[in-house]
Length: 405
Image (tube, rainbow, N blue to C red):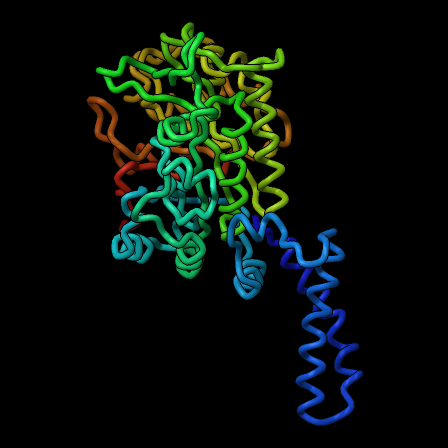
């Protein structure tokens, strides 16, 4: 993948050689042109030498995916990311409709919101941008309506907002169907495991133990960062939560536990993002830290938490009553403020000190309860009271209170 830091390095080399070339120009337009052409070839040779590439060899990142142009990288460097994100979710259907996307962005007040959260890869495996990855092509996952990601990031920044991209990880039926070596199998065979019966719409999953699956996801992180997404959120880093788990086959595990393979993958993705000039946040539903979540993580997901964590505090994630200490909430979705307060009180003591925190708050109706602007504000206030000032407002339709969108 093309990486911003490489672009910076090449520009530095070019600046350092150019003055010497100019000193060698004796006079005349013909000499000037000749010196320029000579300098250009010297630049390429020096850049290849410092990058450790043999003469004539192209870097793997250049071969696999296009990155930002030098002008684009320069513009990105000059645009500071906001210190505290206050964002809204942009649905994939709106993202991939140019007119709808532009109308959405035009309706946002930069004084009220400073970030737009959108899907790079959805929960059904669809890649929403024009990926050039070989694995994405093999997975047949790039949407026919895929956007030019670098251009979209430019639109978002031109509106005074920061693009924040979400990648669903191992819940990916598209890639699981088309990358056979990357999918969870049924025990004792080569048939893809399904999370339900075929008649009930069961879907295959990517296998966290698969090198191909992890490499595909990591390459998506690198590619998105190279095209201007400086904030990336990784969701669905888990095993399937299904009653059919006893039928799953993961292949060679090397004795590595489920939680350890997931944590190792998060570190791999974090490092890839960092090297490409971006920051990666792990997404966890807050309920994963409130109750027993060993079914999908193998153990407590705390081991996966790295530099940055987005907690989904949506009250509707609780199907039943919520008990935290002496607090009992019979219908958590009907009491959004109390639910967020209780959830964070149980979850935050488990989060490693120094972790950057964001929350995803609910701005859609719950079963039997129409959410209001006051309900949304109450969730944000509860998070701020717990010391979390960064948030994304989440509505699956992209409809928000008080923002005009």
